[in-house]
Image (cartoon, one colour):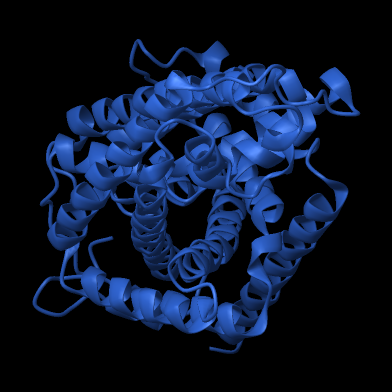
Length: 418
């Protein structure tokens, strides 16, 4: 680390909490209830509870590790320090590839809400604009995140009010064909929406008093997101008729449209746009920092580790991430990658739990047995996701591992010749 220019500690606990909560209350909250309800039916709330419990295990592990290793990179760094280079690489590569695809998905969701006829150009413009915000420094990122979070929270309160006042047609969402068997896959999808607190850990090098601030921010952000998701799940189950919740692509908008407050539907559209921007901003930031950390260890090309400019940001990594996201936007239907990203995130947190289990000393809130439960739960949810998602991400992880192995052999030969 001493050979690299360090990032500056400018974020307080409130800033870090806002970034984590803003990540979790991103575009996912506006769409995730529908596919989860299609799998779990009336047991949707149970899926939310399971996802929240697994997220808590992961949050505890991440908080304990981030307090000990307050540097950029999150579980990539933790895995390397506690388990070895290969587990760290697996976590980092899964995070970078999965979340880069998620960046494109969030950008396209924003474009679809704001300009349905021109979603891709608007999505590209959003990526360029938010990358520019990141290049102005992490304090600008935190400020914009807080502003967007306020808009999203106001929108969700309005949706909850609309769903509560009704009217309430008879019957909830139809039971899924899988019945109880759909609860775990639905929990895997819901977990995707919970995973934003990873952004706090990836910003560890920029948080003031990290040993104290990071655990507080992680747990506060998770508690807030869990309360909001569970409340919305229960209200939607009670409010939307028949199989509508399972079939719609805009569950929160439908909830308002079928209430006495339908005149407020445009507010939901604005809130969805703000949520997408907030999630995209935090995703670009987190992926950039993990890319920076991997480049520092030569698991990615060295130039990606360069930090500079007036605001000491990893500008090469930020620009590289933006370029890949834009390439995905113009060449791929990225809305199909949510399951793929979920698998990558769950593997990432499995490594986090294993790393926390290996800690010699640990805070009282992170017992070793909880790390074991989190590790097994992550693997269980990962491998109950749709087979296409599992196979695709296994192939991506395998390709990354093969590339690293080849690079290590090449360096070894070069060193031998020297």
